[in-house]
Every structure is written in structure tokens, then in C-alpha cells.
Image 1 (cartoon, one colour):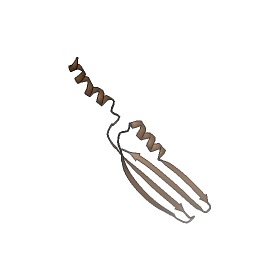
Image 2 (tube, rainbow, N blue to C red):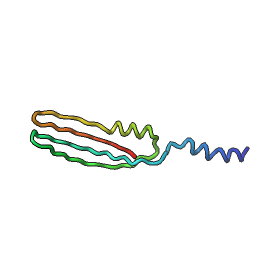
Image 3 (cartoon, rainbow, N blue to C red):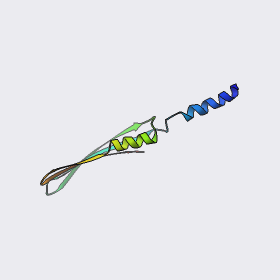
Image 4 (cartoon, one colour):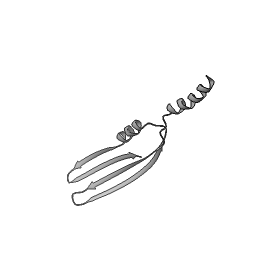
Amino acid sequence: MKKLLLLLFPVMLFACNKDSGCYKCKTTFTVIVNDGEKDQSYSVSAERTICNTTEAEIRKYEMDNTDSTRYLNPPMTIDTITVTRCY
């Protein structure tokens, strides 16, 4: 019985582990300004590493941190785009 428990303990330990590795997530924030004559864009990125999470939680994190908005004040248009991708 002790041998069986010693064999099952590592299997159960790894089966319950949520860590499927670490994910590197890159968030890019871009602003595009059109003043009626030309487009200008500015972009900045940041990376972070997220561990101890599931694939479903990482995809939810991507969706929650991805967005776009448009501000119109003719002739000016300002688009802001935030994209998060994890791999």
C-alpha cells in the first residue's frame, strides 16, 4: 500500500498543478491622429510574463486588455488601439 501511495502522490501532485508554463504577454498602445490632412501615429509597447495560469485565463486576459476607441471632432479623428497578445 505504501508503494502505491508513493507512486500515486507525484502523479496527483502534477495533475493538480495549474502551471502550464509561463506566457509572455505584449501590450501595444497605438494612437492614430488624422487632422484632416495627414495621419500621425504614436505607439508604445510593454511586455510582461504571467505564470501559474491556465490557457482559458490567458485568453480572457488578452480579451480584457484589448480595446479600440474613436474620437471624432471634424475634421480631426483620433483612434486609440490597445492590443494584448500572449504566447
